[in-house]
Amino acid sequence: MQITDSDCRQLVTHVAASDVSYRPGIDVNGNAVAPADLNAQPQINVPEVISIPVTIDLATNLGIETPFLARPTVGEVQINRDGRVTFNGQPIGGHAQQELAKRCQQIGVTN
Image 1 (cartoon, rainbow, N blue to C red):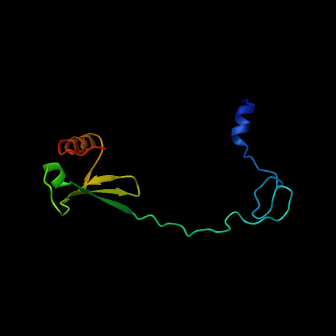
Image 2 (cartoon, rainbow, N blue to C red):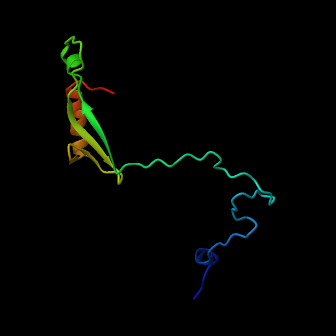
Image 3 (tube, rainbow, N blue to C red):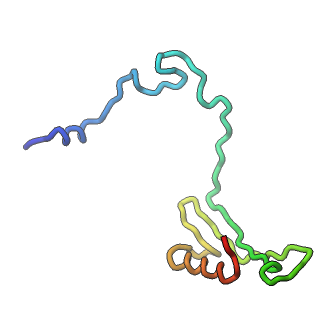
């Protein structure tokens, strides 16, 4: 059996010398330094689901001048932390995504 240098490199785990390992509060010359998070802000907790209401401006799309907003919600897009996206509870992707874009174009929504 032969083991090549390449095989050995894959088998051996690299261990950094202690003089190159990160040490918080110490610079490369061993001197104390201020920590990088001097004015650390609290972490933002991202919700499990982000909901985006989908509305249409009826007055503008119908050419009606009105003193009030007429923007009914026609649906809701939800983006889950795991990346799933739904519109009114139905998955968006592939054909569904194309159909949603087509319907948005039909009602005059542009980007």
